[in-house]
Amino acid sequence: MRQPEITKELLLQKAGQLFNTKGYKATSISEITDATGLTKGAIYKHFGSKKKLEEEALMHLADTMFNHMRQAIREQRTAGDKLRALFTYFEMYMVKPPVKGGCPILNVAIEADDAHPGLRKKALGMLQLLKQAVETLLENGIRHGQLQPAIDKTYYTTIIIASLEGAIMMSKLNRNDSDIKMITKHLSGLVQAIEL
Amino acid sequence: MRQPEITKELLLQKAGQLFNTKGYKATSISEITDATGLTKGAIYKHFGSKKKLEEEALMHLADTMFNHMRQAIREQRTAGDKLRALFTYFEMYMVKPPVKGGCPILNVAIEADDAHPGLRKKALGMLQLLKQAVETLLENGIRHGQLQPAIDKTYYTTIIIASLEGAIMMSKLNRNDSDIKMITKHLSGLVQAIEL
DNA sequence: TTAACAAGATACCGATTGGTATCTAAATGA
DNA sequence: TCATTTAGATACCAATCGGTATCTTGTTAA
Figure 1: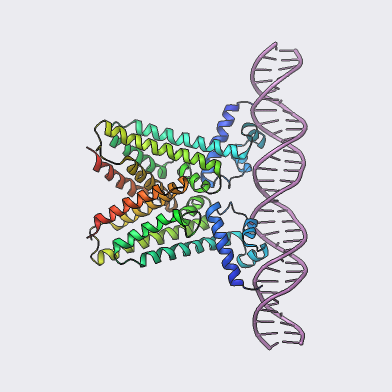
Figure 2: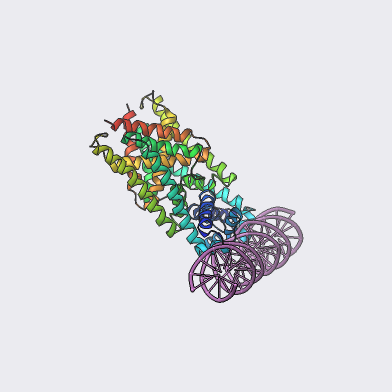
């Protein structure tokens, strides 16, 4: 009973990592206790149920991911550079991932879409957040006269996210970054074509 | 002990459907016996272990998927039309899927990439098969003077597969086909741009 | 200094897991 | 027709699952 805040953070961190690599339902409580050195008592004190832990750990993964992403974007000044920083961020997943196991959105979407309503709902929210982020990037680029104003933002947003996520799947399966690199190259070309 | 061939087919079919919707490790033997009306005896007689059943069911899913795909492609005569038929095939996943649960390659790749070497290897083979199919389509198109000969086939192949798979994830999560439709529209544009 | 509280460890619960051994009966070959 | 084979049902196994109740002990407030 020393530092409940730190204990909770440790549980979210380790459980999130296991969920994102092994899968949510495929990870058992005992694997989490093994990974943390804690016991069931600690888990059920803080979260009450495994489902609750799954959902909170997912949100924690999302926070980590979006924070890293936002920082990478913030460091750039034009819309084009911000978009390219986003692509580089996804490329980095293959080299030194901020969270192990690939994109948490992709992972939880595949696992939860048919069978786990609670997780699916959170996954939907995360995807919506990502879409919104890209769309805002495009919008600001247009407002500041950096991107062509006539483009269909929703269309570009979907192309960017779909191909990045698909490429992550391919690169993770192949265990090399050639696929994701090809995609980021292609997307950079798309962005360049709409830059002013 | 009536028709072992039919029993095995039924097991592969039902187990495959469950694996592709609920996940491989998340589907229990008892769920498969419930779905088929058979018993453990039948399963272990035919497959020997759950792992073996998982792998054979995956190959069965792959066969089903590739057969449907090849047929759709065979019905078209030019490379451009064949590619567009491939896109339509993926779009159809959302309306009336040949196998429930989305793309078997995507699903098994996400579940198996980090934790299940046997399934991962088969997933790799399936992805390679899909890549090869697309690349051959492009190659034949070039040979028959239907596509620009200067294009980078690997590059186009990766773009096509990555964005289709990513879009399937998005559309399945959203439970509507707007994302996949946008992607197939975009890819059709790409194809048109390289058609002669 | 001590009483109250709460973090977390321990011990247990019934249900379910994948797997095996045994049994039954339908198909097959002589 | 009968013996052999084998598909598949039944009954069991130890291990593990998520979850709960209880106990211990560090921390806090009076």
